[in-house]
Amino acid sequence: MAVSKKEKIREIYEALPKRNCGLCGYGNCGQFARAVAEGRASPFGCRQNPWAGYRISEIVGVKLQLTSYALQSTFTPAPRVTSSPEAIREEIRELSKEATNILARIENFRARR
Image 1: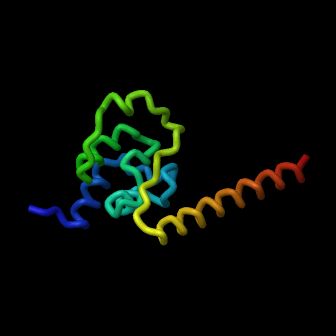
Image 2: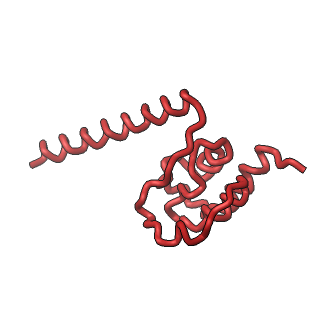
Image 3: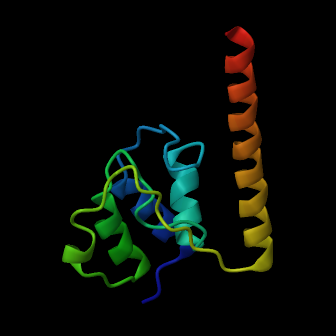
């Protein structure tokens, strides 16, 4: 029996720590769960509990070798899964915003010196 998208999102959400920290790049765990279910984010995007990625991978049907991720640092950016040109454009827009924010913070830091 096929699992509905809504059920898959719920299962992914249940595997997460539900801290809504935003370290994954999304506003909360629910948004991250939806992005993973839609193929827009890696199952290993949760920085609060990277091991949740194994359970999430099972939910979305991705088979992994445990040993290949055992030594992965929690600070290593997870690969993002993109499925369309629009998703790539959106990712570029987000990265551009992040770069602009970083540059503004550097300028602000320089101004305070």
